[in-house]
Image 1 (tube, rainbow, N blue to C red):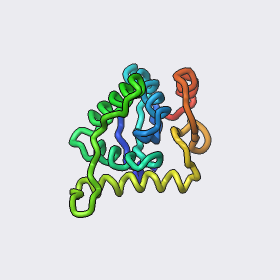
Image 2: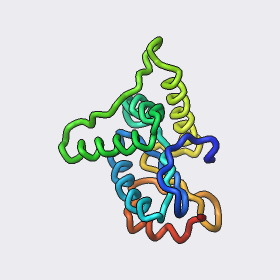
Image 3: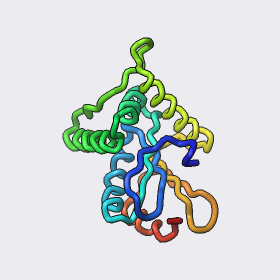
Image 4: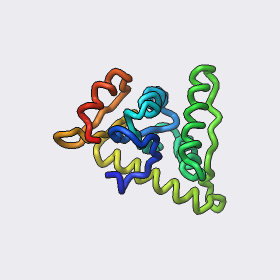
Length: 163
């Protein structure tokens, strides 16, 4: 799974989860905030898998994050902007990569193709809503959580996950 998906990893300790996220998903942002504390505490590693399924602006926003020289910083900045937008009620001011014919750079085209592959993965596992988290338990097959996950739920899940 990890070789096929394009992701931005935050954290290097604790179990790894894959968090499928769209810049236009408010619940994705809320989970990001929840996960941030666990990442800082060294309890969790999150691989954020950018997808673009909610609005037409999702693709150029996700592509802008992926094509940055420091995608972690770009993701963190985008999440801060999304949080500010949710608080103020004003639209988030996120950078957008151009996908206009003739204007798109190779970097943008590559980022869009990677996001399209991430979207395709969700379609293949028959998931069409966000947020989604995929995890590998200590025993059994891959697990999938669809919908909002609280910090309490994540904390309860951690001991059941592979390191």
